[in-house]
Amino acid sequence: MIMLCWAVTIIGGVLGGGVLFATFTSANDAPQEAAGAALAVALVVVPYCFARACTEFSALSRRQYAEWRRGTTEPDFAPTPRAPTW
Image (cartoon, rainbow, N blue to C red; front, side):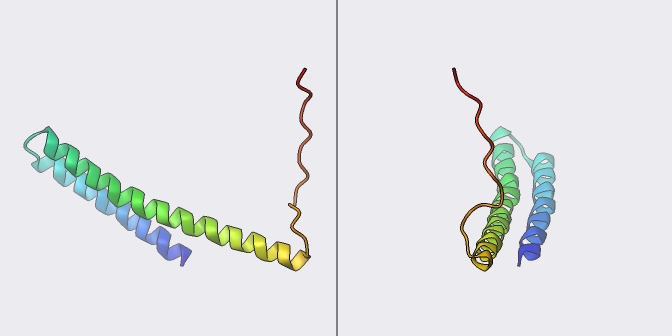
């Protein structure tokens, strides 16, 4: 599932680049270029955010499962001591 999300992100990046190139070669004025650039950015950013969220949810699920297997909710690391603020 996560690999599929990242594959869609790569495809979105290629499509976004194509849309950006097509926009800059065929636009007549600045508003058309801005609209095309916004569409190109959306084609890249939306799939990236979705893939990143899927990755983080998967990592969270793995951490919760590991904590359940250990029978504790304590983190794997000890907090670093803070320096005194004088």
